[in-house]
Image 1 (spheres, rainbow, N blue to C red):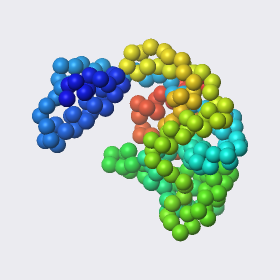
Image 2 (cartoon, rainbow, N blue to C red):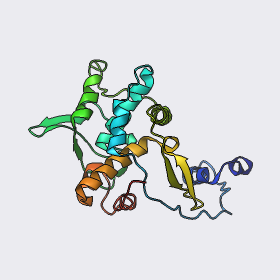
Image 3 (cartoon, rainbow, N blue to C red):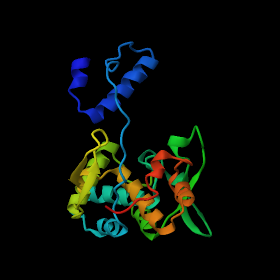
Image 4 (tube, rainbow, N blue to C red):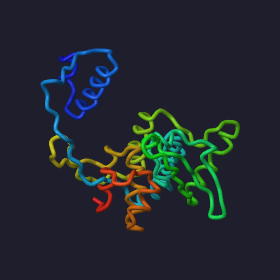
Length: 236
């Protein structure tokens, strides 16, 4: 066990330790190879996200020669426009869509906070988000699905490919959460489903400057440490 764990870089040590703690708590093992290690708290930098202009550039890029990338691009843009966590995105279905005199919206209870603070998040869909749903309406007319979802890992891999195909590759400073050192990487290399959420929060916060409203639309708990990072967010 120890030899296997030592092969992994530090960022993965956190996941490994969490698994060992879970296994111990479940009574599956009493072995704790991390007992002699002291893993310090992670350091968080400012969230990196794409501008509204970059988001629209991704959406308008012709990816018809790669249908799979085109579909995952659409899913990513929909997530950028609704701000839901990927775990909630994958739970959305036709029952998650509603309408009232103000327009069409999605509504859901964030899975991450369902036990502590179950509140419904309601986000109205703009024209682009509605266009994406309309694009796949016929494909899923006989199912409860609304978006062409694939495994979350393949979705994250596809997002990186989409960024490169659309020429979104500017260099950004990234804080290594373990060493605390700044590293410079292409934004395409760090693009992921969580960047879609950051894009929603960051661009919305720049417009309204109201943390309560943004938190309500993004499903962040009041006083969330993660949400605090967005309050002085700036484009990098």
